[in-house]
Length: 309
Image 1 (cartoon, one colour):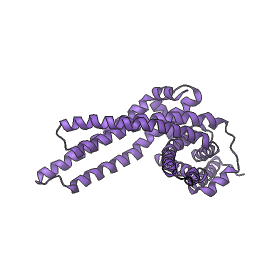
Image 2 (cartoon, rainbow, N blue to C red):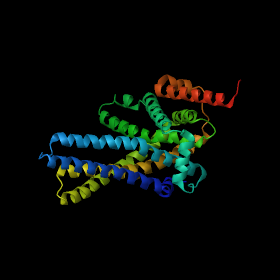
Image 3 (tube, rainbow, N blue to C red):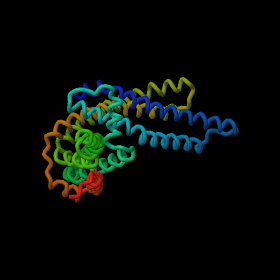
Image 4 (tube, one colour):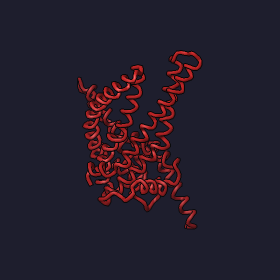
């Protein structure tokens, strides 16, 4: 199944991301209204102090919601994308399927958070070791700016690749979640040139469109909010929050679909090199920690089964 088909057929998750993102914007507006009401009640001006409280509380609430609810929406989307890429069709009632798969593979929410964090850290540490292209090119006069831009797109792209490694956890249902995550990272390491080139190309293309789209969106939303006689700084802040919500729902999801197609194209056929585990553990502390979790997970499974060796 192609990326565009995946994107169109998993729209329920994309709409869920958008609704959730816009809900954080509404919460931010409510907080502003409360603080503004307090300032009027006590005959105060809306000072820098109240402004900082508003921005700080908005970002804190957004962070907590995105990391406890937004992450689960993302995990469910990844589960459905993995199923669709492998089988060629999207599961019926995909929201329920995604939810059930997340519960089945990770059990508890904190387990998914931990694996996601370890996988993300491992992918970045490994890339820092095997992809030091910038250090070589910087020796050429005038290349600093170009390599800095390349490294920026590499860093952005890695965010989508680590999500694909999590997709491998849903693909390999016959082993523990930590062990599958370990294998998913190793598969990335063996195919990093192809996967990173694909992800960076997609990210570059979509980023340029994102910039143009964001500017237009900010102008439209900002103009509407200004017509409501809101201060310019308030209109700008709310416009940025809305733009981020739209980007997360539509643009990030599209890049994820393209990257997932590329990853699952090579993952099932990759014969993992056994010696690569030790090599990666030497260059990535996060990967080493992930491996230890996988070994502990296997030992717990053996003990529960009553196997005595």
